[in-house]
Image (cartoon, rainbow, N blue to C red; front, side, top):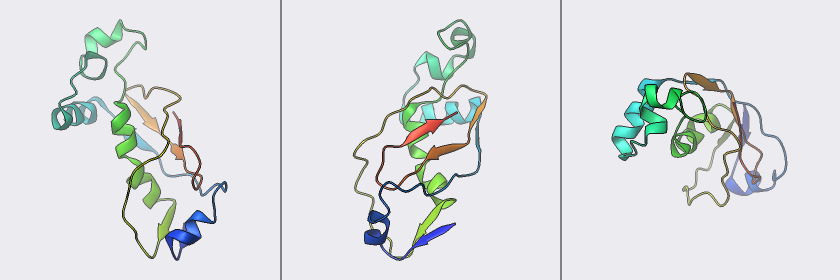
Length: 119
């Protein structure tokens, strides 16, 4: 794991690949729990039978669920000794859906670059 002494040092690494995280398995129970917490019960996420005949053939992970996993991925890739506050995400785009059951093996974390999801 790479360690940065400050946020400024991390900023200096813009454009560099920081690493690849461990797999995170997404199952229907995780989607159902996320739906309960957020109130996002859209059928494509929680109705297994209906989603089976939908555009992806299965339920898919909420985009915000994927985004909420960023701290977990980051913890396995790099550390910042001088922690700062999280003031948001400038650009975030999902390039593929997260089929369930399935696993996400990385959120290609390059310092300051767009985040790309590989499923």
